[in-house]
Image 1 (spheres, rainbow, N blue to C red):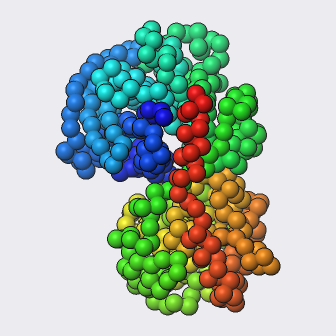
Image 2 (spheres, rainbow, N blue to C red; image 1 turned 180 degrees about the vertical axis):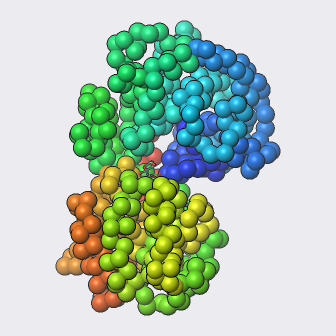
Image 3 (cartoon, protein in one colour; image 1 turned 60 degrees about the vertical axis):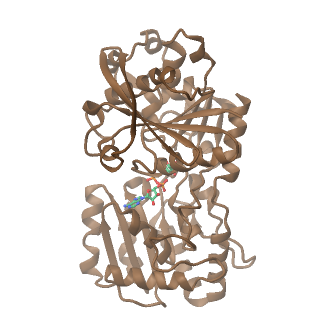
Length: 473
Ligand code: ADP
Ligand code: GLC
């Protein structure tokens, strides 16, 4: 049994910008069910202060990291078996939004140091610190090089890459926000181009590096997907592993989900049909059982294949389908999508924004879920859509390839549809095929729903794999 402290820039139920928050909200809980002890530490953003006003304040301590010299207030909460710690520093974190500020490097330099300085003040004494994505990438090197106390050197480090695109690369001057010797820049360990890279430091100094699917682990050591980090990653050898994400199957459960108009199960999907009608009604689509409803819930960026969607929107809408898109992101994509309601009245809607409740209703109410990503480390959305019997149509990349098995009409197998090359024509070909199956072979479609809903999207297996890594360390 190990004691694992998760460090992350976001985590449910407190704050979320994407799938990382889903993982931090559910993996630690699942590990605890399997006998580990887990705690989580997050920055205390404005949104957390507003939505969770009753968090308990434990103490204030001073944090010194290079030129940074500020107090941190430590807050505490517990959900299920997992303990949560929050580091409050309003100059850095009391803002609208989580990331994307000019001083992100300094903010997370402070956070990394504050996490390590927190350890003597809390009862939870971690064997493992499990860091995630660039925000926390400097922790292993700081823990190993900035502290003389033996207790710090006994800790082992696991670093998980959720998205290699965001590397936390900053000008060299940011080194002033760390108490690290210049040597680590000069020897190249944290140097990237002419600056420093949080993610590179995480990869090099963690004892084990993981990423969120086996396929993405294979992809990121190639120049096509490696985002110029492929050599550093390849050097990890078998200390780089892929472990596919799961989801919280209690929160995402069509049989009990309170956001749904009607609940349903794999054996009785009448409730799913009611959810579809109610979603159509709510969004101003023509209410009809017999038209295929295609859904998207996504950040609207090129990573998610939204440019393929824009390219083929006209052809998709030429078919007998309805379309609902819930998302927010790049201005260009948002502006293009804002036109669909007037172009295809009562057939297509775009809800521009972030809406948790509506997302549940889209996952439940649609027939097909579209996720044509250019790259996808794992993807949480296709897992949720399968759980709700909404058939994913994905590009075969990263975690989408690992989790979606394409429909095979001869063997009657599969839980979704997929296409290989990142091309609008290929995507369109498979969409047309899915539409054909939907209208022409109701039995096959019903079987697809059953297979999707029976797919194990829980953390059970993957949490075991993390446990093995912790124990091996
Ligand atoms: P990524 O983390 O790359 O954005 P994932 O598929 O791993 O992609 O996770 C996305 C998560 O964010 C899912 O839980 C999805 O339901 C949620 N999500 C994305 N966009 C929205 C939105 N506009 N409203 C509500 N939830 C959203
Ligand atoms: C990132 C990836 C996504 C993954 C999520 C959680 O946001 O883009 O594919 O599911 O992290 O690991």
